[in-house]
Length: 180
Image 1: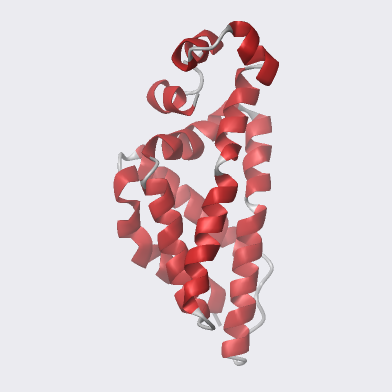
Image 2 (image 1 turned 120 degrees about the vertical axis):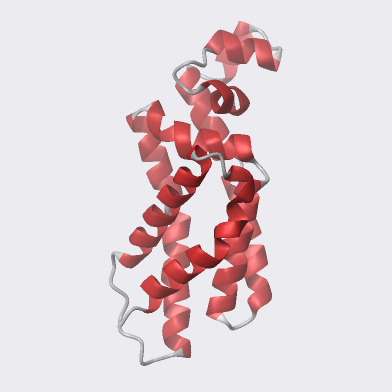
C-alpha cells in the first residue's frame, strides 16, 4: 500500500491495485482491512514504534547532555525517514490527503514526540536553571514545524537527503527549547 501511494498518490490508489501488488485475494485483503483507508492507516502506523525506539537508542548514547541527546535523536529520526523515501512520501505528503481519520491518527502519533521535547526541555533546565519555564506550546511548535519542514523536503524530492537538514533543525529546536 505505501509503495503504491508513494508512487501514485492516495486518491489514485485502489484496493484492486493493492491486492494485485500484494498478490493476495480480495477475501484476504478484506479479512485484514475494512477498506483502503484502514489498510493505508495501518501501513503508516506499523513501523512508528521502531522509529521511536531508534531515536531513544541513539539519544541514550549522549549520557547526561540533553543537547547531545537532541542532536543524536534528530539525526536518527531524519536518517530513519531518509532510508525509507517511499514511506516518507506516503506519510508526510499523502497521509494528510487521506481524510479526517488520517489526520487524527497522525495527531495521535505526535504524542511521543511532544513528550520527548518536554523531557528534553526539563533536562535543559536541570543543566541550566537560569532558563525560563517552558511555554506549553513549544513542544507542539517543534513537532508541527519539523513535520511540515520534512514534508516540504519530501515534496521537493529531497527525501534521500534529509540528514543534511539536521543542523538547521537542531538549531531551530534548541532555540525554541531554550528561548528566553
